[in-house]
Image (cartoon, helix red, strand yellow):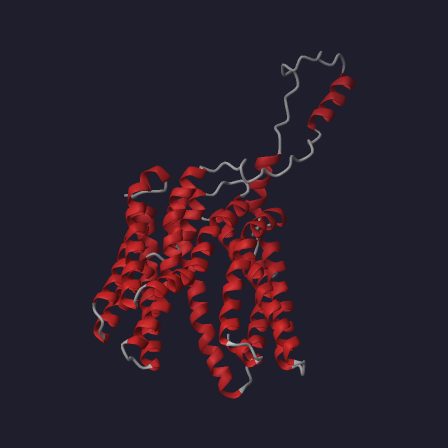
Length: 411
């Protein structure tokens, strides 16, 4: 948003661009999953990262080159919108890789670790950017981002670090397209060959691999779509709660007179608590089951919203931030874990593209929900309403958990 403002955008256009990025991500999520399924995980990540390098380099050009103001702003907005599907490629491919390679007994911890790397990056990125902006112009942040993307491409193509990267995906793909070779003498309705020459010719003809069948469509995937919709409602509510949390903390902090530095400190404390509780949360997903953890996450999250609205003091805000951080930390990676649990062996990335729609829709709808609530009610009422929606998601998850067939408690 800062770059858009620097290029002459107003507040409405800058915030609208962020909303547009969410809409583009939502639109391209399913096509991105199909692309990853076709080209393979590592190749998709490499292509996505190379595209990120190109887009980021052009962003630096839009910010640093002496272009006319409308042209520079237009180019910058277009490039921001192009980043959305690129980020989807990287995110979904990583999730598919972990789902392919990890056994179900450790999938919760693995997905939590994957989500943790993203949280650490989201924490370190702004800190490093802040340090750069002390001495350098705004476009230096994008140069740093470009260098990180180049480093990612290099790491992806070091054989020692990526041996067997796509093996599991290739095996799954072959399992869904290859046909068994019938044995000689099987009951096929044709006469058996009479001599060695005929037998050899018949063997060669039967052993010739059949052309691969087309990849299954989304409806043909071995997926329990009823379970997907039931579990997806809880994930959608969680995505809404997560996007509302920082917005509500900032709005409520400002409304009760807390200084900007105090609000920033509270957000940082909440992020630190989430990082600390992330790994115990991964253990609990594998130990207690996905439904129990998601239910607890939504219940604690919802209680934090209600507490914030019910206690209009600084102490109440601090307590609410801690409560929500506990819920969010324990539920870190739960959306990716459940998506991996429900995904098929063949066409996994294609399915994960559909699964990501629940999260993207929640992230896009959350700010719209805040705007709608604030247009008809006060901020405390909006907080109570957000808490009620989140608690409703917890009730839904607990009530439908058995019908989803997700992994339960493990001894």
